[in-house]
Length: 313
Image 1: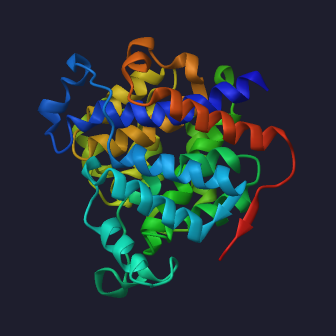
Image 2 (image 1 turned 180 degrees about the horizontal axis):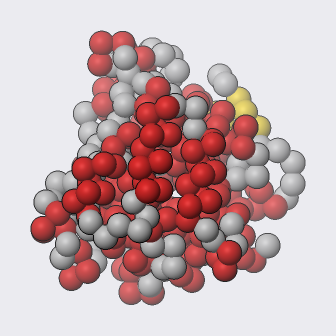
């Protein structure tokens, strides 16, 4: 149980560290991003971690998923700190919900009724992967529902589920027996969307490649979930021996570096536990103690037994 607790904390701290490391490289070219290892770590994270915190706060308050509560938690946190770097979509959804539109209807009105296929739902989903790590069906269900507060496009929703499942797998698989190709196979079997399956197949084929330009070309490094979730997963599978190597590789690809770093960091943190995260990064991380406390509370819900609840209202 002590190791499981370390993995819960490692996942959430790992997400925040990856976000904060990548923030200064967001939008950078590959050439600029390759200097990631020389970065001075400020510890300041963005909306990726801010919304991940909101997911955890709501899951803890309700001992499971409550869609309306989670939506209003997002709104409350955004109103307190709107400067965290939110993209245009979530604030539009938040304003619609505040105007009286139901939490599970507002996001459907974005982008001509298609919904967002960005990576905003995937970047924050790590606490869902933790709380439901031992129940694949429930993990998928809650990942979908938590995504749909702001992202209703199939690619946005499936990206969140895939990221949550990657967290769960990384948490469960023993470090000494981790097999990257087998890890990719499990993720391919999990996804229900052919576009993601194709990306994961490409990622598996690239495991022995050192050509970062090819990785970017085939997997992507942009804000779309399809072009970032598989990239974050690949960054971990390519560098499973070390949290630091995973995250530095992820942000070193440039592009949407903070979000890819956050997602890769959550997966690697769940695998290595909090002790695997360099202490220099831990010491400087903004609100480290509060994020740790949230992870501990999620762990307590899990170890006390019983199944987390689902409240749709």
